[in-house]
Length: 149
Image (cartoon, rainbow, N blue to C red):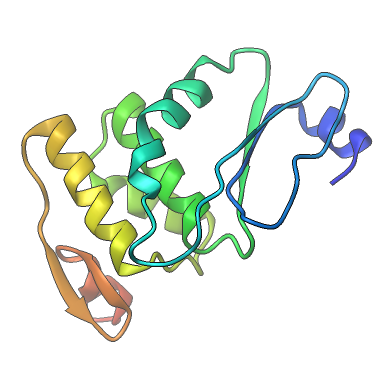
């Protein structure tokens, strides 16, 4: 990341979801740090509402949400944002993010927190099931395992 890239992409907000990376300082770019580990017992869900609200209120430009590998923490926050502000289910949010970034793999704790968040938002949930890919919402396991047409 550098100033020229942030300017070219129109990024005005960075959400840094790491324990080790400091927030970069770029002109015209706000950085929010969410210091949460990528472990099932980490309380990423405690940040869903305020990070989703901050992303939603970023009318000045684009938002970059990143973690160390882009596989668990940042996709989970983006899925929470999509559920809250785009009105989609967890299943739809997962598909949306996975279509853009096929190698996401949230840890089981983050799935549980997203299911709880979906229930809070919609008073309903898609349910979960286990697969070789971990614990995932409903029929998503069938897609992940290549069993859905």
